[in-house]
Amino acid sequence: MKKSRVLLSALVAVASVSILGVSTANASTSKVNDYISSQGIKPVGVTKSIWSGFPKNAYRKGTGKPEGVVVHETANASSTIYNEIAYMKKNYNNAFVHSFVDASHVINIANTNYLAWGVGYPGNARFVQFEQVEVHSKSAFAKEISNAANYTATLLKQYNLKPNDAAYDGKGTVWSHSSVSKNLGGSSHTDPVGYYSTTGKKYFGQAYTMAQFYTLVKAYYNSGSSSATSAATPLDKVSYYSGDGNENAKLSSSYKSYKLYNHVKGANANQSTYSWSSVSAKTGKKVYLDMRGVKAKSNTTWYRVRFSKSSTAKKYWVYKSALTFLNVSYKDATGTKTVKSNSTYATHNHVYNSSYLSKEIGSTKDLQGQTLTINQQGDKTDPDGTISTYYRATVNGKSVWIYSGAFE
Picture 1 (spheres, rainbow, N blue to C red):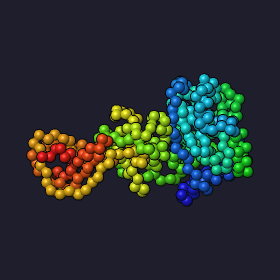
Picture 2: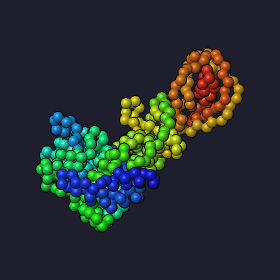
Picture 3: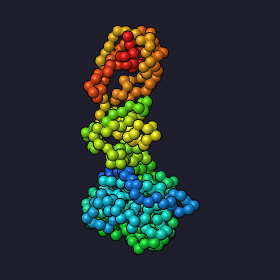
């Protein structure tokens, strides 16, 4: 953590220079940015909760993608992020943005590959747009700013855009709503300038500015951080084990205590989270698994799941405690067993449909009549209470699990 803070401080503490006559001295002495660094505040990942009701209109011709990011704030001191999202869904014909940010969340509700209606013409056809919900404490404001800056950096990387503060010439990639109004028209709003200024003064004794926010965006962008990992936080190393893709488990009664990710948590800089409501989750719901991941440092186990049997269905990563597997009890075994002459069972590298996940590696059709030396037994309890027994043997130098019904 100490190294992370030092690096972020170094990135934020840019030299005081003048660009097109505008001094950036205040950007290098931000009490908010310094607090984010000194407290080791880490930005949260993106929770995707895309609502299908928003219109899907393309960005302007010649680009086909956003050209920058516009930062808004809601100007509602008593609202919550969920209230704002609900209101926007009901009133999207008037205006809507792609995402909402507060101290604990970055929630993406509209597909950023299509334009939003937040700043009027011509800005709508050019930018990804997100709203910040007003927060009411020193810590919450710092966390919100960290989330917003990191999310901005993430979007820039997603669309291969370089940081460029639009406040100077109206041609950059990082915009306030105020800069859009001033340079492009289509709106008279000036957010989030006033919110940044008054909230910074209230909790830090210093107005927070878009120049300081831009400095933080560049820090996250240059550090390689995005969507969940703060500057200089090393990525976790993970060992992956694939299964055949047809095995399944069920959501446990405690699944809501965990999150869905697009990668094993902490293992990829471009990390996003997804809401359980987006997959219609409920306790006992069946999920299909095709890969297991074990994090090296923490020795924790993760699974890649999908909510449909189809192999092309969207896949998510989830911590093991969000799932319930069939119980398999193991014990040492000795002796020999002979494969039936008409046996055609698949053989696997683990007990089929166990928490280890398994891959088919052959068939007892190739072992018919052979006597194998057994070294372990696994008893799997099926949902109806039936116990299915498997035996492990060594075949051609490899450990193979075979269903007991294959033997005489």
